[in-house]
Image (cartoon, rainbow, N blue to C red; front, side):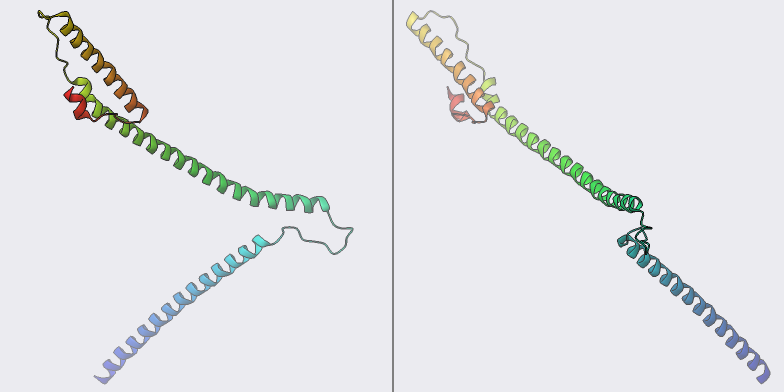
Length: 177
């Protein structure tokens, strides 16, 4: 009986060692990968700030054309990145300005529609038709004068509203006439 328990304990001990060993190897692999990534990032960062040309020790061996070309190319590469960013930001600004103009135009249209709705009842109010009855010439001239006064007054109100000045008289007063 003790022999069987001993074998079971030995098997469990061996399994525990294998699990610990596999976990340790996985952790070691993850740490190596992290260290490599960190070193690669650091090397790239340092390489960005370095000039790509290696300077020789002798002045006669200097290739000034190669040096100037590499420096010019590096400057153009850096400027191109900034130019792309500036162009992208300029395009965003233009789009936002156009959107603002559209909103302002919508607001202006809404104001004009509101003014039109204020004037519309005045325009659509039915004019009492003057029946030709037997009246004296003085009365018919007075009625024609009142009708002539109403139409130019409504036209001037409409023109004033379209200019943005609003109604010169309230709608209720113009309806009473």
